[in-house]
Amino acid sequence: MIERAVLFTGLVRNEDKFLDFLNLFEKSSLENRPPIYFSTWVGEVAKYPAISEKLKNLGAVILEQKQPDLVLPGHVLHQVAALDFALSIIGRDVFVYKSRPDFVDFGTYKSFMALEPIPVLEKYFEEIAPTNKIHVLGFFAAHPYYINDITYCGVARDLLRITDLPFTAMSRYHRVAPEQLIWGGSAMGRVRIFDRYFRSNTGLIFDDETKVRANIEILKKSACYVYALAAYFMILDAHFAALHLVSDSDVEFLKEISLDDLLWGRVDNPSIVVHPTAYTNSVRRVGLVKNILAGEFKNSPFGERFLEAIDVLQSAERASDYLTDEIENSALAYGDAVKEIGIHGSKAICRRQEKLILEGAGPGWNQQQTGTPLTEKLEGEVNYLRRVNNDLQERLRKASL
Image (spheres, helix red, strand yellow):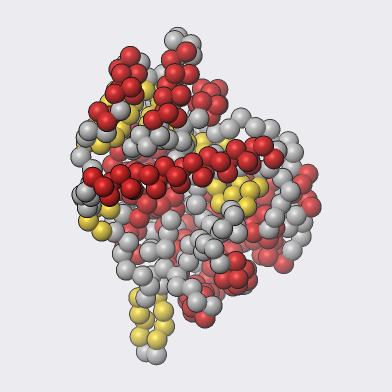
């Protein structure tokens, strides 16, 4: 039987939620209960005496280190540091459930306990393939590598790949989300299509539906985007699996929607959830990826181009190296097109007269600042309200099912 472990990283943030999980965990079967590891920062556990006592009673391993001085977008370096420290202690062959104290869910943990590692059978992107699939909760369909990075599980040796984050990704791709850096940081520079896509990527656009819709129309015409999307779905199918134990038998609804609808439209199915301010869809059933790759959706010009790109990449001698002049030129054209609608992309290579110029936002990192007690308190309250809002949205979504 495979060895398992439960890992929490980062700050406590929500004491009650963490304690609720730990109490349920304590009541679960002692015989099958895996060890708990908590990788955090010096002094964090001491702030919460009740949690400290509960973790002690459960025999949890507390891993503390000083916070990094460098702050990357979404505290990616902090995430990587906490994860790397823990995985180096847990052991490379252990099947690990990873979450955060403020997002942990006992039902998801029970799903993990029923899972087994799934070997990866990769044909097309062997250079970036893990040994076993990583189980995730969901992903944004239209944005390559925008995959839930809070709760997931996998064999430690495969999760360690997340910590292999090239520093050049920080300086080369400026509009990528933290999730995209976590899951795709190493692939961005090793898969040529991703390199070109993420150089001009705009990221999610919030609270401006007009610009979102204009950007979608530009994306649909971009050869670079359609090939990046095709590579993304191929990798989702080969390298990832579902964490939730849900049935993937209900796929008939896909035949009633186009690929365009799946990515950006309003779909009447609980598996497809539209982001309320970014107007793009997240997919909660990873198993649907296989059906999408098989073209089991309503026909559309964009969907046809997507399936053609799948065929080309699957037929390529080396998919990671595949790149054409059309893809190169469309990446350059995309950077210019989005500027015309008032959007700035990543640090894209742009043609200006006789020169090639690297344009875009500057690096998104800064030095860690030590706040005053008041600013730290206010920041904590803002984060708490954000989590309450997320919890309420999730409850409303479940109530509507």
